Image (cartoon, rainbow, N blue to C red; front, side):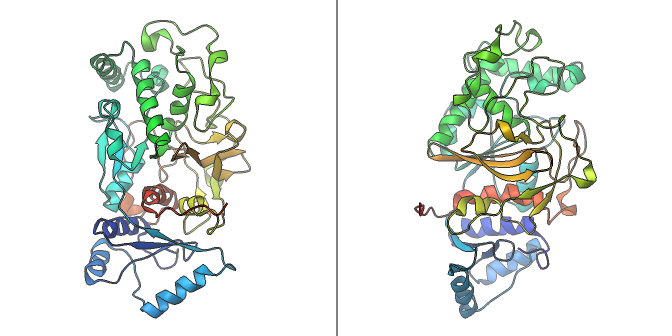
Length: 394
């Protein structure tokens, strides 16, 4: 999985997932040649690599044993983690065509990793319990329809989206979309607390935390829910209920395409040509989880925009790990934390290979980006639940 020899990093994850589906174990060699995978040697696996265009090397048992022995040395920052079972994946997404795409579903499809689509009804019926991994993407859990009001309130897709959301909320027994989305957020929270893994990108990151912190508080203006917001609602926000963020100021105006001060999109001063974020380095033996989640063939990853591009460092809770950051801009791009028995990762931005992806833009063709470091971070999260859990040394 290093930069020199792997021609298709993304499909290599799918090949690894495919191997796990066949009840074969895989060793993930953390920090060894870009986070390589050690698979059993079988003709069927070699043939599948060739079909998918995944670069591989066949090594002897003696060579494999020597690599594992070298990795086990306390002198090197490497570790071999056993992947045991292919995680069952759910993508939270509404039905029907939307004027934007989803980086995670695109890369899962490209890597040939199977997933199932669920939405509010399934979540409220406790079907999350059937899955090991949940993805949230371009979603607004606050009931403000993505804050698209100013630019798109007359667009056919916006009008239809609002109508469908209101009908769904009513059918599920809620008076407002914001109330129904809060109920969904609480179910997702319980899923994570109970041991699930949640991965969120773009506006699903901050809008999810905002919805939790505004439980019982009306933060929606009349054009969103038909009545006024609660007076002085900022003072009623409860940051103790959030996963990752604290001390943020909500954006009151419905005409501003922003949820709160968490997002750095409008505050960042950096041109596209120099927009990169760096991945942190962790101890593979002592901190295997963040090490798994930052495996890559480069420590410097191209930045990319989104409704929520990145996160203000001073509004991230102290117990949340910043795994990718732009220090010059004082922003976090890629963060991770523990909630109860489960885990969550928030990744700012919309599409790692489309810098300023806008509503209505064509989707990214991943055949043009088979070695994308930004997309690799997504796939690290997909495989993370497959790892054999070891007792922490601390």
